[in-house]
Length: 365
Image (cartoon, rainbow, N blue to C red):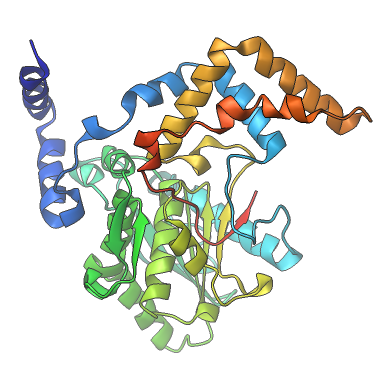
């Protein structure tokens, strides 16, 4: 049987096995022009399987990349530390970003101080299969004078399909995605999820309404983890591009965000601001794979894992030598470092055509 028979048959069997998800995919394609040609078989699933099934090689690459600071191409505001006030804000937001996963079970967070104005966090049922419709809640913290928008990360089948709609696309960040832009390459599934909150559900309008109800001195905090972090970042860029809020009126805190925006968009997220004024923050934990996750990144990572698997003694020895050079006086030679070339330079004609994506804002890692 050739692929022209196998692929349609596979889609038919999937539709029979899970008709609700199939219907939701069709609705998603109809609602989003950039999803009209979405096909999961266009994704690098073979490469992803190669990465997932070679733990030792992946761990060795992670150690090497952390030592040579290679796999996280950052803007000039990459930081490994934060001041005391920022740490307090990070701890505050991380608590709620994590809590959102368990809210359907644990109930409302910190009811003494936070009034939940709106929540939609499906864990089961038909709504959990909706695509690019992330779970979220809006709370008002009277004690700290903050309006908090917390966006949940990947938890449902709909969230997973949102993650998988990942081949970079050039989309308009203008109002109603108008043709005047600005245009950036971005993760289309996460863009659609952010735009769903921004325009379809009018979450942005509701936040402005809450501010207008005698809370003009409140600050808007947006936060999320994983998929929620990516949505948080794209939503912040939509606000900036459309001048919804002034930069000093809101902050976005993205924890373990996948790569979501091209270099121009990443620069936009920190433009015209000094270090202390940055209002978009992305947090990565050392060599966490999620924070480097993109279609291009998966293909490159698969090649690196394959190279290490074929030549394990070379890279294990090199790792030991780099580690030793950091704690001893003996220096590693240029020739030894040059042996990294086969795993650092893995671009080819296919992957070079895929747009590079980055996290948004100032990066802490």
